[in-house]
Figure 1 (cartoon, rainbow, N blue to C red):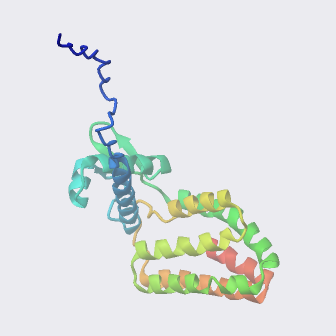
Figure 2: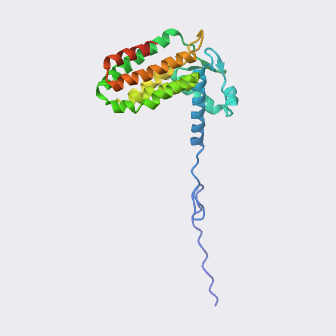
Figure 3: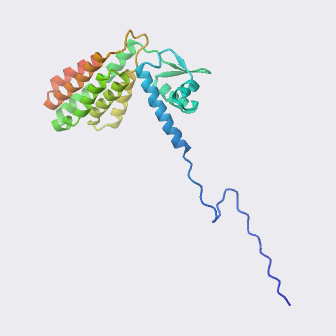
Amino acid sequence: MRTVPAARVPGPAPVRGEHTHAEPPPLRPRPLIQRSSVRGQVLDALRTALVAGELRPGEVYSAPALGERFGVSATPVREAMQQLAQEGAVEVVPNRGFRVVERGARELAELAEIRALIEVPVLLRLSRTVPAERWAELRPLAEATVRAASSGTRAVYAEADRAFHRAVLALAGNEQLVRIADDLHRRAQWPPAGSPAPRGRADLVADAHEHTALLDALIAGDPELVRALVGDHFAA
């Protein structure tokens, strides 16, 4: 008598989305990382356009139009503009886009006053505690501001200017201080509405040479000269 093989009892069907041994695990998606990178590049480009005066105070700019200008979709532009809105550079105009905020001389003066209240005491303290060789290490950054100023391009100088100030304040060892001061510095670099004329090459070069003079005073350990130079720097 022939033996009939026992019927195979079916096991539970795999749940949708469950991996079997024959299925390789899916690759981890990366579109968010890529979009974040694009957003960062667009944000840098918009900040440069603000400093250069290419985005004019009072004008409204749409995300699709700016996206076409930068060769990207409107989405990273909107995300970058939202960041600028949080920083106070632009304001949202419903159904139209983003308006560049019109800033006057009074706001610039207020920003300069706040920066002085934060940075001057820190610099004076550092002038008494940081050794000369540490200050000498910042010489390339100070000289970089002079080269950037010589180009006559405000956006290029703005980056070098902030890099030097960040490096000086970083010697205090307070990351929050550096972050807040850099944010104030960035806001102070946006040109005001109705400015009769942008800062020219000569003004930028004069400002940059104040960095090298300040560094010389810090290396020499002359706190009184440091106080005078820093005061003049922010007053300008």
